[in-house]
Length: 104
Image 1 (cartoon, rainbow, N blue to C red):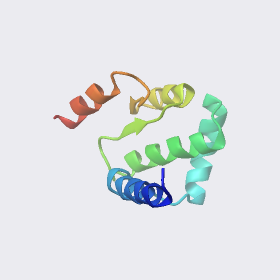
Image 2 (image 1 turned 180 degrees about the horizontal axis):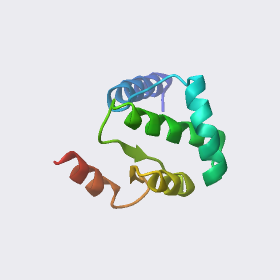
Image 3 (image 1 turned 90 degrees about the vertical axis):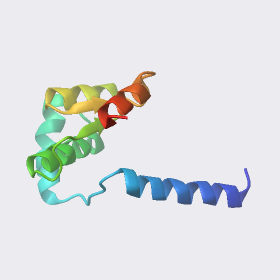
């Protein structure tokens, strides 16, 4: 792959991420919420922060219908236990599940 093609793909990915995801900075309150999640579910720090962010977003009412996306089985299990709808992109049925969730 040429350097130009690579840079074009990265730029497209950046744009897709900004459109598809709600990106947030990690605040101290998120880290404080993540610590008990990490201990309860034996999560890595980054996974606990991702889960804490989703739970806080839902609790703040910013987004009612959060679908938690992760490829890590332990993280997905923790998200389910915490009451989130989950989607595993590595699951062969993930595309069908995503379409069902979107109503398309």
